[in-house]
Length: 180
Image 1 (cartoon, helix red, strand yellow):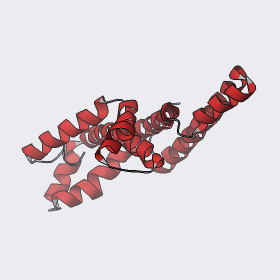
Image 2: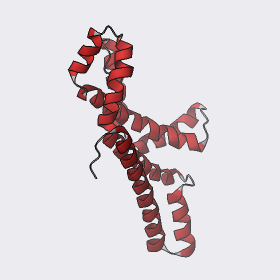
Image 3: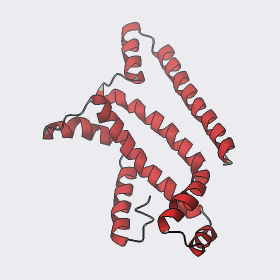
C-alpha cells in the first residue's frame, strides 16, 4: 500500500505488479508451489509454514488494495490541512491518513479475515492435519460423511460468527460502521 501510494513511479509500478500477482493467483496454486517446487530447489520449510506463507501472500495482495482504497477515501482536505501545519509526509501518513483509513476499511478487513479462514481449508489437499483432513479420516474410519461435514460446517460457522462479533466490537470502539 505504501509503495502504491508513493510518489516514486518505479516503486509504484513494482508494487502494483506484486499486488496484482498476489491477488490474482489462487492460494491453492501458491500452496502447490511451496509443497512441490520449493523442495526441488532444496528449500525445506516446515509444513505449517508451507501452508501459512501462501495463504498470507494471497491475503497480503488483497489487503494492500484494501488499505490503498482506505487511504484514497480519506478526504483530501485532511492532507492539505496537515501540509499547511508543516507536517512531514510520513507524519501525515501515519498520524492523519492511516488512522482515518482504518475506520473506513474495517468491514473489508473483517470480510478478508473470513476469506483467509476459509482458505485454510485447502490444506487438506496436501494432507496437512487440519480440520478438513481430520474430517476425511473420520469419514473413512466411521462412514459418517453427513454428520462429520455438518459438524465441520458448524465449527466454521462459529468461527465466522466470532469474527463478526469481534468486528462489531471493534467498530463500536473505533466508530466505524459495519453492515450486518
